[in-house]
Length: 422
Ligand code: ADP
Image 1 (cartoon, helix red, strand yellow):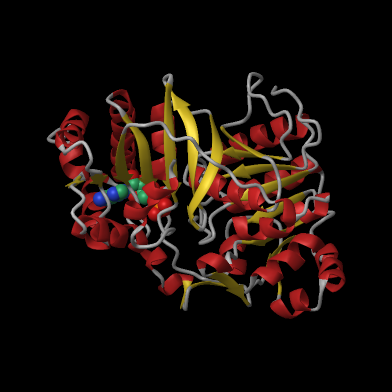
Image 2 (cartoon, rainbow, N blue to C red):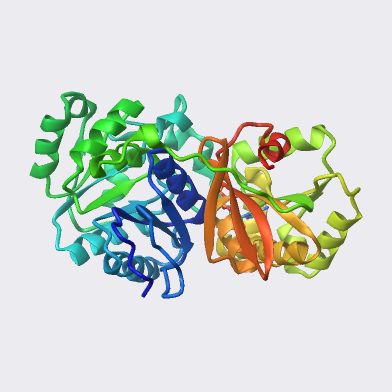
């Protein structure tokens, strides 16, 4: 067990790495001292002085019983070090299939805590994720009309979150509509106390998230995207005015971008970077699977680019191409082939002096962190909403990492991100 933090307010469990980062950043902005750890915290990790600990798992798309097992182990470790409230963080686009893990993990955490109710709110208005009448919108589109309908691992074809979550769990799922949220903290609190099971809560603006955060003060478990964490630090007497800013002394060395996300945003970002002259290597999962492209080939490509160039190595592709590699390899194997490749490649590149790295994709980032053997991360300056630089060590090398959820970031993120490093 990790050494107890003096007054740990929030113990958070995130189902992927970029989600953990995004949440760590949100809590930091609210004034909390945040430690991010990879996997349930072990005894040698120092959590002293932390107001919040965010555990990142890679549990979004693993079998539900494994996700439950890992989440419960993390929750127990966080409760052991004194966490007063647990937060279960999933994606703001609710990435999960009908066999997915959000429902089962919520049920298991409620049971662990001996609680009967919680809320679920993935809204993140800053990144244009809003929930209205229980329907999740991505910008102007329903989730089911957005590019998330073609996600390689978790295609989202139903935007009604009450329905989506109800298919995943035994406990009842209900809706707390925006009118109740806008009626204020007391009304919302009373409504939340009256529900049985899980309530999907509407939210359209940051102010709604602050109301929800305040109303959830007495909940031992809160679940949602990082947005709903906006209102939580205040519950512990921590105010935004003392929001922490971070400088990050980045190691000097070469920079590289690795992309495994096939999201529309990441594919735009890659095209923007390639057009600006950044050298790119496109990976084909089928070629990797039949042994025609090896990790050494990709590392050699990166090393052969001029010293001041920033190579982009990407498997990201359009839905039709993803469907074709999935048809040949199967969905899971296609994903694993790319993830394993990026994982090994990242370690190889760090060994060869690449110590500044952007990774695009949640699962892809998890794979890279595993490859690098990183166990804890310190949050640094934010590049775009939800995407900070972070400092870590890998095999004795200091590395600066930006782990980007596929859909996050401006189109020029791969070009401008480096300016934030000292
Ligand atoms: P996002 O953050 O956009 O969800 P992820 O990295 O979480 O991105 O998920 C993308 C998944 O797609 C990963 O499992 C990755 O290995 C897989 N993938 C990447 N490129 C391809 C491709 N060309 N064909 C099939 N699967 C792919």
